[in-house]
Image 1: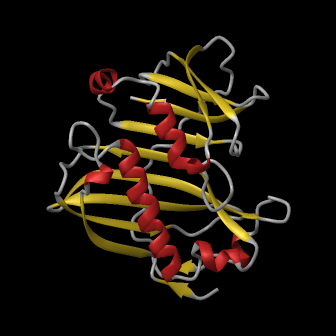
Image 2: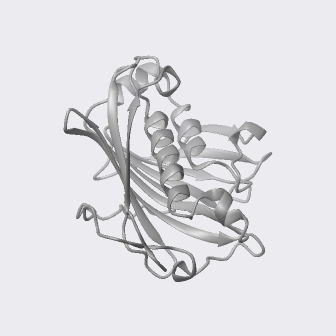
Length: 243
């Protein structure tokens, strides 16, 4: 396919809708910002959600690692940039950086795939994904965390019933809402004490409206904790490592 501009930058403000009880951008707020600008960039290079829908395809994210150096206050002016890496056979990488006065305050590395609506099988990237005209910046050299899906002895954090407002255009539980539901298992005081600066998020199975998932946690050698979301069939659909 033809080459395209691999990056997209825009100036944004930390809106009240992005912020939490501290008047700073929340963790779901960072993820929403990333997803929004990713959509703008994808549309500008012909692989946006509506363009792919005409081909019977839709995007899913499989892994996200978020690193937070600082949480901006509401109304602060920021610059965000997203860029793509050359795709592999059935997956591609998209990165994101949020900056203030030239200083990086948050960073995301993520892996995505295209699924076919007819059978929910992965589509070959070479048939749909453009070649970036250059690699803006290589991904950091820290690999995604290997999170075991064995949570049989884990402690129950809480349950969440997936509602209509949680569903995205793909027809399944929106990836950002897993994080909202997970963090909603903690109080504001607990989240303040945890002061999370890094999250490794991994999506394994799609969940749908009406399903109830259980969030469970266990201690971790390298992280503050590891969390799993277990569906009604007892299968782990989402895992996260937090610190």
